[in-house]
Image (cartoon, rainbow, N blue to C red; front, top):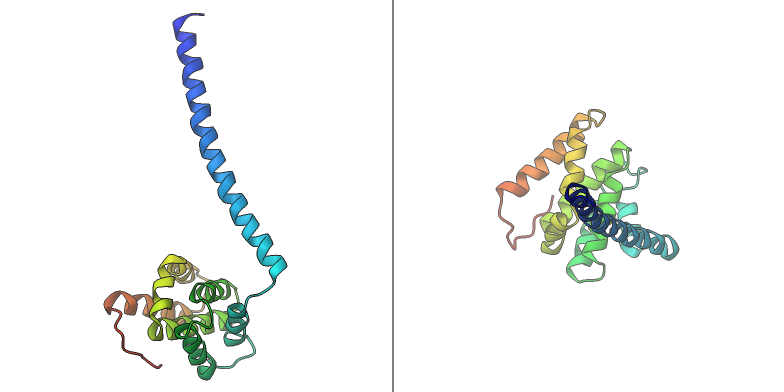
Length: 167
């Protein structure tokens, strides 16, 4: 076999090894995500999802402040998982219903302003990515975009303190 052909075969082998490892990682991540979704399907909604659904129901004309603050209290006293709650808010925020999106933003704001645990989960659950999508979507009503922008701006300009804010 001539050296040029051997070099090409070696280079192709290296490419296959590298690409194969990358495909393996992607498949592993995809399977992990899929198994989480299947687990979620069979387990049904968790308590945090039920609370988020109630607090962001399209049947509400305005935010249910009592429920929103009860949710904050449950997070503070560890009766519900702040991770599950933020995931539930993110899920509801992604729906195309403007009222649900608005109520999700209000619930998120209430939790972030009243619960340090919720504030830290916003970054880890990539909620800001979904908020940016809301801002960038030309079909989103202007006041929903403005609400998302105001939240992002307020989080960026104010340090998180131990003070509890009520809206």
